[in-house]
Image 1: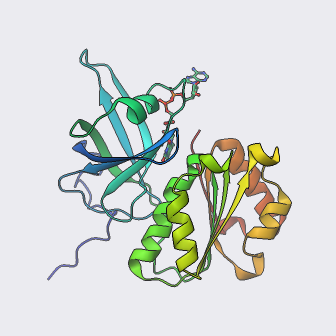
Image 2: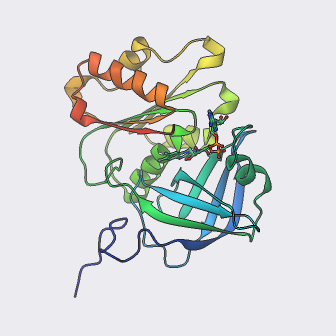
Amino acid sequence: MERSPEPGRQQRGAGRLTWRKATLVEARQETATARTLVFDVPDWPGHLAGQHVDVRLTAPDGYTAQRSYSIASATGVEITVQRLDDGEVSPYLTDVFDIAQLIELRGPIGGWFVWRPSDPAPVQLIAGGSGVVPLMAMIRARAASGAKTPFKLLYSARTPEDVIYADELRRRARDDGGLDVQYIHTRVRGRRVGVADVHTHAWPKEFEPSIYVCGPTGFVETVADILVALGHDARKIKTERYG
Ligand SMILES: Cc1cc2nc3c(=O)[nH]c(=O)nc-3n(C[C@H](O)[C@H](O)[C@H](O)COP(=O)(O)OP(=O)(O)OC[C@H]3O[C@@H](n4cnc5c(N)ncnc54)[C@H](O)[C@@H]3O)c2cc1C
């Protein structure tokens, strides 16, 4: 019997780049500006935590717009979209797109910014804003796999009200001694994530953690510089920039 390919790693030509029709089956408001969309995607091949999909919208006149969204779920296809008031696509997905409507998506995409439950190294996740989405997929994949790998999440959000997945993170951290969650609220404390935050809340370099940093470009660059300054091996730091 042939072994099926690892989820998210598709056979050549099998169509990672094929656009699939996806139906919205559930939507959850996570914060005032962030909404989770749950899709039914026939023949979804599975994915690894950290991968993303491309989403394509087509207007009646044929105009198309395409954006990338991280997969939030461990299984099935869920994305969480943060509305940018002056954006083109995100306000449509958070405010207009409705249950039973169709969209096109392709993926899973990305083979580097991924976490596999077989990786024994302790994991440090550092999120800025909606950059928490692929990191949440890693937290969910860890729980789903039963892995005991110690995880820490350092999550920078403007205010407590801007924290995506707040209830789930609280519940998971309460019930699971292997998961630590710390927040930095930039609007409350009036400053950006700094050396002291990372030094205090992240695994020290001696633990040789696998590190995943995701968020806006400036956030990711700042945090990566801090990690290197604190002595972390640059090869262990994986970053994803949302632009
Ligand atoms: C790998 C990856 C994963 C991602 N995952 C997520 C995710 O999980 N959740 C999520 O919410 N987002 C995610 N993003 C970001 C997402 O792809 C979109 O960029 C985001 O939703 C904004 O799209 P938009 O069409 O609403 O905004 P856009 O219309 O693209 O505008 C984005 C911003 O750029 C500004 N802008 C637009 N055009 C110009 C211009 N010409 N000059 C200057 N400024 C301009 C706008 O004012 C706006 O603030 C991800 C991005 C990448 C690359």
